[in-house]
Length: 568
Image (tube, rainbow, N blue to C red; front, side):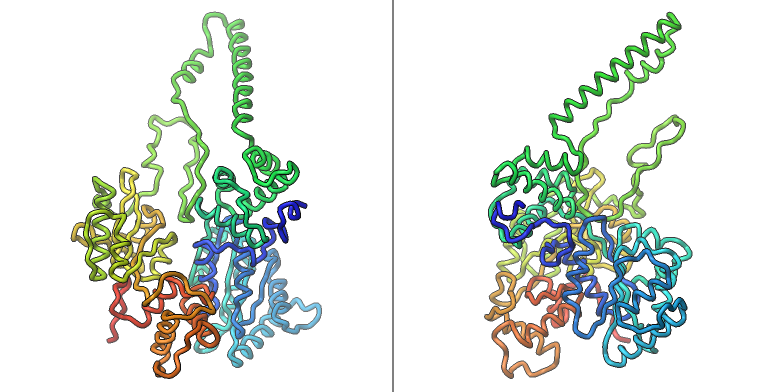
């Protein structure tokens, strides 16, 4: 309806999981990379979780468009089935023939096993993807686990990817499912979009729909973020209704009134003016009711005033201010508030007693100046790279690095992302006063993390680190000659020559024989295979992460977080 009004080729904010509209935020790129990693790995389970509407199914659809030619996929969309029905669905997805009306689990499993063995002999892989996996029953999950027992002497025959809401993690914590939980080889959680990503998300979807004007002003973007909490599905619903409202009013831009009306219609959210009116009305009703009650009590009991204790309690109770909660920006562990006790206790717990307690001593996590500890952190990072750092202003550290042929890369993600890049990093932590503290991470083990603070190495558990880390970090990386920005397929230049040389080195072939000068054909295919093998998004784009992983493979003198085991 409004598409023609704005000159769009289609509606930009449909809630259907159309891969072409997928906005690849940092979290979505990482999620897709994890799924691609799951496809290339041998056996086990890969889990992708996220709240309702964060884009899990859309990522899966995007994954299906990038499936390698030698991979067969069974995609289960309706997990509310019995174990027998699930096996039948897998057979249907893989075109496995079975007797009509069969209800025997053994027959299904035997047919699936025969199929997997033949696929393996033909050099093909088979992947089972289950969406909405939090709805799986315990019996079905156990049957899925048993399917992973189908194997040869060297590898599992079936790779399983489970996609679901956070309740899936809770489900696997049950004791009877511990064997399944132990087979999960990779987990990733998609969180909501950050505030700065919401505008990019909206602009991206409008551009795909053929519209490039500024239809949502900054104030509207902020309001959408606050209303949606960064959840893409809610953003879509809000924007769709707001565009409809603009069309009805003959406007070319979404204003505050239109957006508030849209929020009220679909979410029951009232404007500030309506909230104030409602609060005054409720307050007036409470006063009238309290006055009538108090007057009646006084009339029947006289001077004893039985409600005096209650009134005094209300008058002396501390005032509580409730603010609109800020949307969650990261997807790390959240500790729920304890239930309110049934009877009052002499001392109420302080906020500190409610929060999870770090298991390590964090006395080092303290600095009189945020700028000073950031300077110290950069000193450590530059030293690891053998660079010169003039400790004056931390804001020009990246400029100093660039002059020495090194770039900064700032990211937001999980500890798994830091581990994957494998570079010393500056992490943004929270100190005891709740202030930001920048700490240089110089080593990372399976369960420990080591920082260098004032020439002292401090090791804490990764569990403690997750409690004090914001999820943001900065690393340094070495870029190729003449590299200034991402290189897309079809490009040519010195970076393409550098890439061809790197692959020649990796593949052990003569690099002097005919280097391609364009990112296309065999070189582009080789790049995508490399990205897939490294758990990256196989988009054929030469960006920072692809270059970092190429350097990891070809240059063993670079500083890393994880030390390689020496051969014995």
